[in-house]
Every structure is written in C-alpha cells, then in structure tokens.
Image 1 (tube, rainbow, N blue to C red):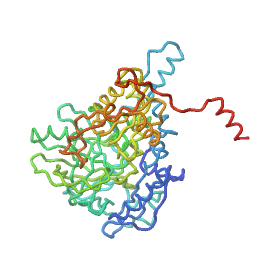
Image 2 (spheres, one colour):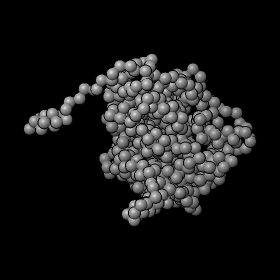
Image 3 (cartoon, rainbow, N blue to C red):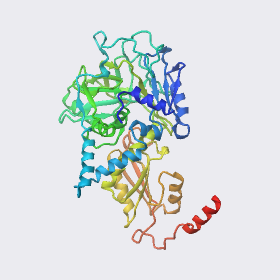
Image 4 (cartoon, rainbow, N blue to C red):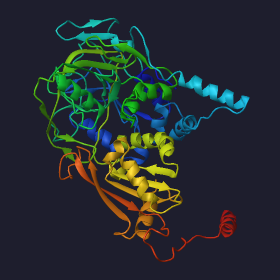
Amino acid sequence: MAFDSFGAFLKQLETAGELKRIVQPVATELEITELADCEMKQPGGGRALLIEKPTVNGQVSPFPLAINTLGSHKRMAMSLGVGSIDEAAAELGSLMKAKPPGSFKEAIRLLGTALDLRHAKPKMVATGPCKEVIRKYDAPPTRTEPWPPAPDITHPASRITSAPAPTLLNLPIQQCWPLDGGRFITFPCVVTKDPDTGERNMGMYRMQVYDDRTTGMHWQLQKVGARHGRRYYETGSRMPVTVFLGGDPAFTFAATAPLPDGLDEFLLAGYLRKKSVELVKCETNDLEVPANADVVIEGYVDPKEPLRQEGPFGDHTGYYTLPQPYPVFHITAITHRKNAVYPATIVGLPPMEDFYMGSASVKLFLPVFRMTFPELVDLALPAEGVFHNLVFVSIRKTYPMQAYKIMHGLWGMGQMMFTKYIVVVDEDVDVHNTSEVLFRLCANTDPQRDSIFTRGPADVLDHATPELAVGTKLGIDATHKLPGEGHHRGWPPIVRMDDAVKAKVRKFREG
C-alpha cells in the first residue's frame, strides 16, 4: 500500500488506535524526548505521538511533530501496507526463488510477480506537494497554495494563523538529551549521487543544526554518503546534497535498510509500496526527491571548507557520542507541502523505535541472507545489542565448524561488519527468546573451544573500541558438537516430554 503523504499514514494509525494526540504545547528542548521515551518503553512499543503544538524556544512551531510512528511491530507492518513483516518477507522470498515456469499456472504466477516489479522503478514528474511552499535562500519565499491550509487531521484549524517562511529555526527540531551539542534532525533521508557513476543513494545521517543556514552532516566513514563525499573531496568540487523528511514511511524504512552499495533505495521503496516513487527535481541542485515528501532541505557540502566539530549526541548505543569533525551542510532552499508534518525519532537506552525498524529489516532480508547461507534458519538482533552489537543465529547444522562459517560470512556482509558478538545455536532454538539462547549458550559451550576472536571494522559510535572504527569481534558456537570439533565425549539429548503424553495431559487440563 502506498501512502500519498505522511499525514495519510498518521490518519491510518489514528483509525487503528495506534496514535495518541498531544494537544497541549510540549517543548522540543528535552520534553518531547522524555514524553516519547516513556511511550517507547511501554510493552510492545506504546503508541505513536502526534504533538500538535511543539514549541521552539517557547514559540509554537508552525509544524506539528510526529514521533514513534514506526515504534512497534504492528506500525512497522502498517507502514509497508502488510498485515505483518513476515508477509512482506515471504513475498520477497518467493521472488528470490523464482524459477522458469513449468506450467501455465506457474507462468501466470510469475507474470503477477513481474507486474509487481514494474512499480519498483521510480519515475520523474514535473512537480508535487513538496513544492507547495518554496523558499530559496537569498530570495523571498514563494507559495503556490493559499495559507493557512484547510483543516485536516494533522493541522487543526486553530493551529496556524500566519504564514512564516520555512527555516531551520521554526521547524520543531529537538534537543534530545541534556548534554547534546545542540538541536538534531533525527529522521532525515539524505540523498547523494556518486559523481563517477551517477548512482543515487539515500541514507540516514543525523544533522546537528548550527544556525539557520548550516548543519553538520554525520555520515560515518563506512557509509555510502561518505564514500560519495570522498570523491568530491578528491576533486575539490562542491557536492550537492538534499535532505527530505516525511512522505510515505516506506522512504524512511528504505533509507535505513541494509542494501548493497549501488542499489537505489527508491527501487526498494517502490517495490514495498507497490507503486513507483514519483520524483521531482530539486530547486537549487540536480538531485531528485519524492514529490510527496513533507519537507525538503536542499544544499551542498564544500570540500574546500574545514570540517566542524559535531556532537555530543545521545546515541543509540545508550551513551553520548563525543564530538568529532564532520562536513558542514549549507542550505540553499527549503520547500514543503502546505500540511507538512515533521517526523522525528529519538535514540538512547533500548528499547527504542530503532529496535522495531531493525527487526523489520532482519525479517525482510532474511530470504536474501538464505541465498548465501542455505542453512540459516533465523536471525535476531536483541534490543540490548542496540541494533547490531549482538546477533543470535540459528542454523541447520550438518558438518563440523559450520557455525564458524556462518560467523565469518555474516561479518563480511554490509553493516553486519559492525557486529561485536555473534552467537550461533541449533535450529530448534527460538532466537527471539533471549532466555532460550542464553540457556543453550551456557549449556553447550566450552569457553576456550567454542569461541573465536577476530579483528575488523567497528561502528564509529562505539566508544569501547581501543581505536576509532577498529575493534574486536567474538563469535560463540553454542550448537551441539559433532565429531571433528574437539569434543571427544558423547553428546546427551535435551530433556523433553513424550509428545503423546503431552497431548494426553493437555486434554486433561482443558478438561
């Protein structure tokens, strides 16, 4: 299902009882974080919050703020128009396993898959709602629609009485935590292009606001945006960058998805929403953004300009990221739809909204992993691992040292290179049940025999590594041991009740 706007998604959340309105003013300075954090810590992730009157330095922003919109398994599924993420994963899995048809019935099914794929490719359009209000810097603001907008679910009629020009100083950008170095845009979709190939990338990199015209651009050195940036730094030419907020929530999910380098995230978004992403050209650079985005911030990074300190920032690690030098993003234009809603998130001590987004990514891309690792049964990223520090994997084990093959393979796949701990268990273990995994970990391992240390790339946000972006990884084989794995004793069976007895007692209890 495709959403024509972020507001349309919020309407569906409210209809489903998944959204709570906050009608009184709430400060973007710390208060929204505390409100959202309390909600995110509720069982199952709580509800999304629509804050109708966020205040910036005591003044009500002309833009309402929505937070925790993807912070539950149900809302993640709703954002992609499916009953559950498992449905989307099964559909992608069937696509991965597609074979030449052996019958007319199979040919019809394959044709249906091909028709679905036709929506994956984005298409250009002349204009869109994201250009209803346009402000080019060094030029007066222009509007193609009357202001204020007509009343709707996200903008009550009493909310706006004037037409302030869009600026970083009236967007409801949060200072999330007390020691943060300033206000941070936390849900930006950052669009860049490879200057050599023209390949587009959409990533998510936080942005610290320095003033009304500049922000930091926190693309870490292993990210695609940073790779694009290095080419511009090598040539010394100005790098076009555009950031957009909102629109179909599939865009936000696609920006965080672990796609291979060079694969356009708008292809994934189009596939998931079963409708081509309509793109419009930016006003002041040659990049493209979704026509139905809520807010678009255009600009550039100048390679000839010194890097600037960015941070501290209360991060998904649960600790503050200390200041580091990053490029400065200069703004040349801001455009937005007349009923724009500002999407936000927070990160910190788990569980947070990013846990549900990460879980959805794992489920969706598990069929892709299985193409490389056919023995893979399931994979989980526990909330305590803050996204990728800890990974549980279950496999169908058939030969010695198979668990180590899985460890090394996963460490070599995209963002899995950041994983500090991998625990491999047998196929009968529910990796989403941390207690069950820990039981097998304690019962099935000899620490010296079943552990492996290796070195490799690390998350630059990891404060515990001895060097920035370089660290150690630990793999633990918690599977049953086979001959040839250094275990010279018999392996006992696990204690289980007979199935017939269990069925008889179950009938007795149901009585």
